[in-house]
Length: 109
Image (cartoon, rainbow, N blue to C red; front, side, top):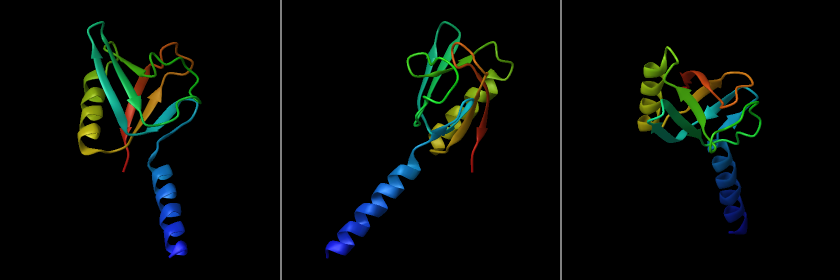
């Protein structure tokens, strides 16, 4: 019985660890856990990942999608769709940007 309990606990830990997203210096893969539209022409996005490796400055823990981005509408639509479908996305930021400015988003399989 102890072996089964230990096996179940180990499986749960491995499964829960696999669910978290991951970030590198210029991108994050994960599920969005916050989309916030601000009237000051910015959309803030948080993911379920440790964002400390990013080479930019987060705004209240969020990456920033500027409305001046030529693909802003498409990116926001994809983020909403991925959030509703509980799918992971890859969020690519502008290197060394002061606000972790999003460049593009990719829907992951």
